[in-house]
Length: 465
Image (cartoon, rainbow, N blue to C red; front, side, top):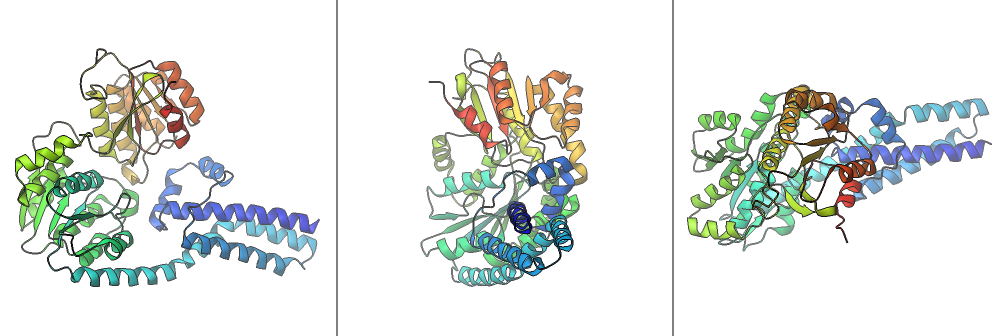
């Protein structure tokens, strides 16, 4: 009997080991993000996650953590197996109860060698960067718009210069350092570096490594407020890029963002505003890329020639065809308050997949599917009310896939006179799919915002045979 119970305990503990390793990896082993997960998600959501299969992405680090965890389980069983039955079963129960703490401590213990290795990699990257005396480095940071600005800028500059850029999803110090070590070559003239952070000091640390001459601040909002602690800390963290520029450096600021305008006034080096005349939110990212290209000597003709080749004129989204002739706006890369609002504005003026009014333009129904946003701290409720109101103004149907701030989204939507029957909380992908099929018709447009279930995307992508 003891052996059966021990085997059952081993399986449960291993499942918990997988879950906690997955969660810490998801939050990039950052305590602030890990803590914010529990502040945002309801307890029943957390407990349901415990009992679902969650497997971390296998890396050297996670493999070592998992193997160490399994070895720890075996050692524990060998140690307590000789105990009396009562003491043995009680010990197993206590270990299960304290599994989150035990496993989190195990995972955090591995941060010690990780930090040592990280510092060595950063040191090597900094040393290599100093060897490239003529390399022009362009740093890009902000709460939103970083990736699209980087991609547009790289596309434009690559038509005239040899450009290296950080890859998709790479904006933390270790990924940037590895880009320098593995990809930077003598032939590169420009390095475009996207920088993200969850706390103050990180962007400064990256700047000390890459030595940027040009800095682009794409916009600031409450994204990751829960990890920064305050909006003031977010502003100071993003401004670290501009403060790190040399006396002959150049700073570019998004004119559509009030915090950028304030920081523009504070900046003493050569500086520019961009996007002042853009009417549709989000398109200022293209203008920022154009402004930098102009400053680097590219003509309007050269810039426009590249832009005309770019099929996707709106940053951060892809237009796809879905089932039954549906148009799908895929904005599932990431989500922040400004991005959601700008994508809704795009949905408002939707003119068809080719950017031209269709025969049914203005008639087709507009749908948004999105989860509630996370890591917004104390600003979360008000932000979701604002987003809800925007949804109510534009959408014929809204499907929310998580319940954290559904109440606030619904309240905002009702302000814009959207009925409760048109803003729904649906978490099951198949149920959402059936609702979309019943509600929509060919030509309707669906905005997929943020990380919606992959199963749902697979269902919607299927083209009608």
